[in-house]
Amino acid sequence: MRFSSYIGVIALALGLTACVDDTQSSAAPSADAVALQAHLEFLASDDLEGRDTGSRGHEIAAKYIATEFKSLGLEPAGDDGTYFQRIKFRRSFLEENSASFTLDTGDGKVELEYPKQFLTGPSPYSEQDDVEAPLVFVGYGLVSDAFGIDDYAGLDVEGKIVVMVTGRPESLPSEEGAHLNSSKTKFAAERGAVGIINLHTPAREEVRPFEVSIMYQRAPSVRWLHPNGEPNVAFKNIAASAYVHHEAAQQLFVNAPVKLDAIFAQLEAGESPQGFDLGVTARLQRESRHEEITSPNVAAVLPGSDENLKDEYVLYTAHSDHIGVTKDLSQDDHINNGAMDNASGVSVMLETARMFTEAGQQPKRSIMFLSVTAEERGLLGADYFAHHPTVPLGQIVANVNLDMPVLLYDFADVIAFGSTHSTLGDSVSRAAGQFGIELSDDPMPEQAIFTRSDHYPFVKKGVPAVFLMTGFTSKTEGEDGGEVWGTFFAEHYHRPSDQPDLPINYEAGVTFTNINYAIGQEISNQVERPRWLEESFFSQLD
Ligand SMILES: [Zn+2]
Image (cartoon, rainbow, N blue to C red; front, side, top):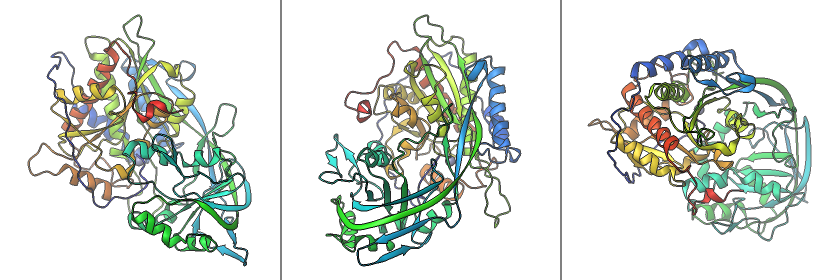
């Protein structure tokens, strides 16, 4: 799982809308707590050294998953008759001391200080970038017909560097807002911009201080390579980028018709600021270094039984990678085991696969099980598969994603991301209802979770998807599910302590697995394939 920010306090916003149904089939197989535990303890063991993309530890995890698939009798669905889809990646590093940001206000030149006043990442495409262009402020930098937003209206950004505030208006609904927020680069590139400057804001400072961004700055950027060796860079014309501290950013607005303090006041008041020419130019320079690594997805198929439907697939995904070994030497334990993130999701997928193979009846549609790599580097293994699928993408009728189920409490509800946008919602509520589990609304829309896991590259390609997270209520009296979840997130998420010695509730894991199995079972056997609801924003993606 990838989160952009740290949440200290989690507000509970529970809207219980479950549709309880008692059509549970008596012959349904059940997940096994010991099997879940065995998978998790192996995948999250120190020997696998945090399963970083391209590492030996992750290779061993991938081999373990392929071995399990084989022993279950599943067919290989990777490359060349194997379970593996091996992907080439380019890792890019920013050369030390190469980043510079020079502002020309007309009255003189100002150098911004790296990394105290601005940050930049490496270029995945070129080794040397040197861009000089006028700056144009574009508010949030969003465009949406559906919501009547065009922050670029009346502005010419062709050949210019756009300056935007980070985030999105709070008035946008969770999943749509998350999608639009992640499309900002696309909006700028399509209008001919040559660079993007994001502004840190005082509000952002309270959630995620600029200092924290400086710490994460050292991580390399990773992109997958097409089979011809070209990096998957969608918007090559964007050759400069920077993230500027809100105080240093005042200097960008010295000639502006509206000063930055007034812009921040507008944001504070819930208004979306209008764009304008900033009347200054900037020169952004950097040098980048590239290296190549490889890492595998692992894919297997249980063939469907129905003559007409077996060419259609229900796709389960779970990422097998994690973030590897920490460089923080102040701690004794350096291995980020990723027990919840995402050894737990892979374990759930392996148990789901066993249940399908051992159920008395074969599903009508085929079921594909896919463990993806490089989720932590930007959903890359899933994105590669969505671009280079091993079965025709149009025959994948739905994606059920498993990522970071927090199996630390006896959850009474689940949050089903994506479920309100397609006919999958009905399957999810029936499946959860069989086990007495309610469906709740997203309690943390600001986290934009819908865009932060492996279903999202499939959603962008038009595949209906659902992604379940354990909810914030508990069946155990006196236990506050939201608090357990929040404590996990604050103290263990992406840290060495996310390891098998957490008080893992494997019985909760059984329930979680049974629900996800029941969802796939429903989808694979229903007559009509799932579809986006007509009124859904995601039915109209280009
Ligand atoms: Zn993660």
